[in-house]
Image 1 (cartoon, one colour):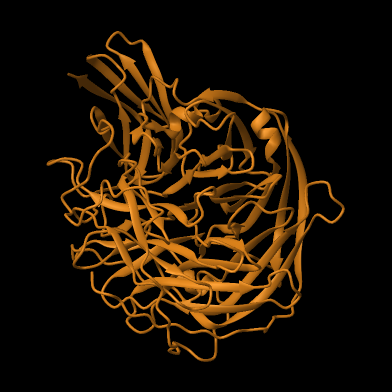
Image 2 (cartoon, helix red, strand yellow):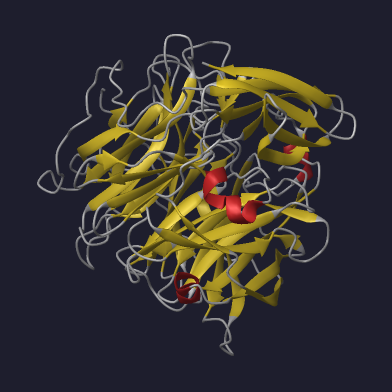
Length: 617
């Protein structure tokens, strides 16, 4: 890959918007609902419901969120850059396989002992970096079965806790207020294949007919934080948005299986309008305490320069536990991103908006990233921001847009890779695609002062993606990134990878996992790396075997039940029961854990009554 040029703007701002902010809080106490052992899951039907028609983007998202725009439009000043040394690539390999769902929603955590937990919609991969052995892939449905009520799970998130040496894995389930809840799992030990304590948080916590969507998680030394959006039923995420709330939880209780005390912060507003998509700033080199920062912006504006810095101060029960909001203005505007290109002229990749996708706090700086349009060539690329001294009354902020002359960049994440308190090095990883290369993953280094390395192209796919019925595919909605805390300078990432499952099952997407380092001496090895796009080493049996699919066409939304019976009419498994949207849907499930024979899939609802005969050879 040829070296890409960069265009940046470094302007420091101490401009604040004076306006009224508000918030409220509500206390909850959640008892443990179940214990699940990941390795002990032996029967996994992997039920998945895929809505095959991507919602069409429209001008309503620009009009509905009619924010004021900067006076100087499409301005991008050039800045002389001091190039950083190249980023180093270590072990990298094909990760989670396609599981009949879109988007992938990649996330990843790695422990000090080298155990990786990688999640996508809708499966979990555990990989031991010391032995290079992957455990059998498990579905989110199987993991959440004891508490899920058979509703569809989505948007998984996972994080490693270096203080407790344990993991947290969560996902929402249900797409309407009556079925919506958030399942949070706390590992009992540092072995993710062992026991997990499962809790449920209400998806409609304020009892106002809303449901929960798009979570983000972070931690302090004592607490777990979860931000999530509340939406109206049967509405798009653009127009159905009501507010973003923050759950603050006592994580040690979760690890021990004790009642989980939590505080819900809601009605977080600026000038009467809810602040949307609060992205938590994770600790860079370690977990900090007791406060947690969140970064947000006006993600649906065609162009804007407002950045919201929200802070949860102190722990649950402390008299100073409250929400504070600072409103910053960055001189470098961000822009609503266009779709990404593919090699197929009929297939594009949706980039959603310019919401913040990753952030960390270290050395009195918050470094963050999100999608943006490059105003020079109108392609989607990465916006990189830095907030200095966020604890001060008047923080300063700088912004940078990465110029991508030939390739589209999207869905970045960021982790700290510095080696000491004078080193602000970060690794920014992201997805790439273009009209000439297949979708894959790339990364670069940043130093917090406007200097960057060349882009490292980690891996490109083997074909374009075509999962949905239209010409707009899902690309994201986020990617995974985490510093390996006991190995300074090393970051692991998981991103979007386009590939063919086999000769007849093509144009799908999975995860590519990579070890990245600031120093070539720190990486372990380069197994799995090649520039040959035909190379994709599957490190476990292909779970696409014995997958059964059935298309469902509805004229109106309907609550459907999917049940599997044997040939004698005995119920084998209630696979799923959830609201199904209108038009074309595909229901998929796995038969790999049942014996050969004839089975019946019954799909029933208020007006639907279908029976499909299935033969497993």
